[in-house]
Image 1 (tube, rainbow, N blue to C red):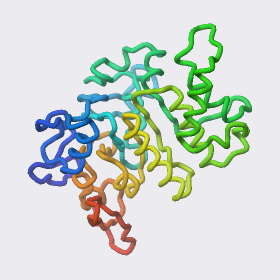
Image 2: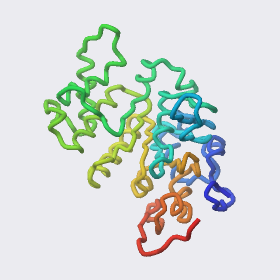
Image 3: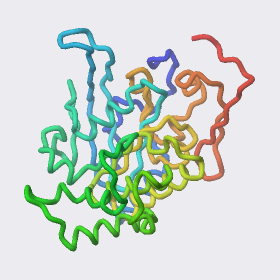
Image 4: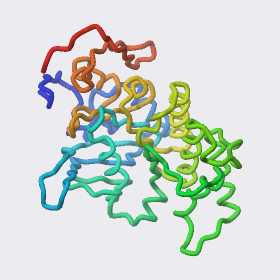
Length: 317
C-alpha cells in the first residue's frame, strides 16, 4: 500500500527500487519500447546512467532550528543519456526541489545525487555549469539585451576570469540558436519577442553551455499548446542527437505521457512511483494525486492518453 492508501500491484515499480533492475539496468517491468530505444541509441549497449538520485531527501525551514515547512522524502531514480525524464506532480509536491537536488545547487540531507558517479553538489560551480544547464520557470532580464548576446552568456562557464569571446564562442552560440530554430531572432531585443520565441532563446543559451544534462523547470508554462508540443518534440530530438540527458518538471499529464521515457511521480513531498508512462499512469493513483476524475487509455503507439471526466464525482479519501 502506498502513501495514498492504494494497494500496489505485484511488480509495480517503486521509487525505492528504481536503481536496481535487470541486465539492461532498467527496473523489472519496464516497457520493452523504452529499453529497446535506449539500447538501440547506444549502439546495442544499455545507455549510460548519467544522473543517479539515491534515497535523496531535503527539507526547508522558515527559520534556523525551526521545524521544516516542507520535506521531500527519500527519493530514488536514474536518468540516462538520450532520455527525457519527467518529474510529474501537482503544485507543492516537491518537483522543483528534486530538480535543484539534481542540479547540485543544494545538497541532500540524506542519500546521494551523482553526475557520472561524482557527487553533484561537491563539484565546483564552474564545473557544474559546464556539465549541467538549468532553465528556470522565469528567466528575468536584468538589462535589455539582444537574443544573440543573451545566448552568448552560455559560454561564460568555459571562459577564464578575464574572458573575452572567441570566434569559437560565437560559432557555438549561433549553432545553439540554429538548433532551436531561432537564428532569425539573433538581433531582436529579448523584451520584444513572444513568450514562445523567448523560451527558444533561453533553451539556446542552455545549449551554448554544451552540457551533458539539461534541467528544465516547467518549460511549457505560459506557452500555448502548439508551442508546448514543439518544445517537447525539440527536447526529444536534442536528447537523441546530442546524447543529452533531459529532466523536465511538469504538471501536464498529457504532455508527460506523450514525450517522457520515464516519469517520477511526486505528491506532497513523497515519491509515489517511478517508471515508464504506462507503469505510472494508473487511473486511481493519478485521480488521487491530481484530485480530478480521469479516464486513461493506451493509444496505438503504446502510450497513455488522459482525458478529464468532469461529471464523475471522486470518492472522499
